[in-house]
Image 1 (cartoon, helix red, strand yellow):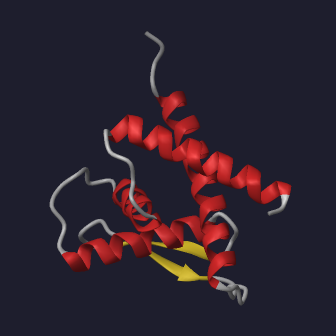
Image 2 (spheres, rainbow, N blue to C red):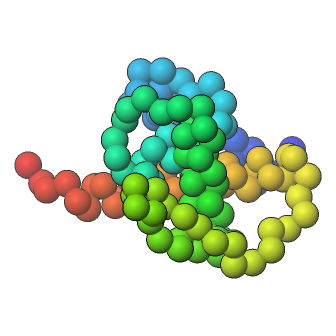
Length: 125
């Protein structure tokens, strides 16, 4: 494994520990983290979602994450407040491991950005 890959895995496990601490349960898969991001991006709070909603939430998360590299752009919200994305550039032809690595890198970037944003929005006590 390359040094860069080892660092990515170290950061990844650190994020999993943070999420475990926050939610009281360790996310059991990449899909679980994508679901969390999708719920956050939807911005309607935690509630019960249908199987189809969960798939849509993971799609929202993937589009949001890939927008960090300019692959997708937010097109707007529908009448129910769900975000819709458009593809703006072709994705590279990655194998499964490369896809997972890219998603993990974007997830780490997403949580860094979101944590920084939430810290700015929280008034000092």
